[in-house]
Image (cartoon, rainbow, N blue to C red; front, top):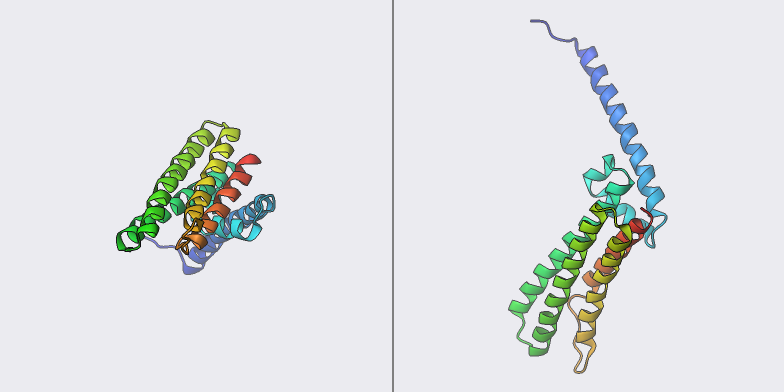
Amino acid sequence: MSSLPATQVFLILLFFTQVMGMSSNKNVALIQRICKKTNNYSLCVSALKSDPRSLNANSKNLALIMINTTLVKANQISELILKLNKTTSDPIIHACLTLCSMDYNHSIADIQGAIYSFKSSDFEESANHLSFSSIAPGDCEDCFAEPPSRKSPLSDISAYFVSLATIAQNIVSIS
């Protein structure tokens, strides 16, 4: 049994690395081009580049990746709300977190609706679902602002979620 000389193996590996590099460079340019059409270029690029599927995705798949990124964040927030609700002794914070839990469940359902609509090529309905998913965090935050007001433990992560949902909506709207 003969083996390939080391130089041939090296050249083959170099060739595949270059081909893969060209593909990923092309997708980085696609990601940048799409993200320039959103309201938050840097977060869009960062979110899409953090998902390895983006390196081989077309524009439609990039939209789905961003919708799924938004869904993952909504689920993480929902889990955080449940943990916070178990540890608080403040009845007002408990009531607000309970409301927030319901609000984020609505957001999750809206994002799932966005995925379904997108996969059915109903991009307008998908964008509408994403828009609706952004309402719940505001309702959640409003609860903490009502007298007697409390500092929301979710403000930063809710703002981040709204940014992701808005970027997803922007990308879907150009699909």
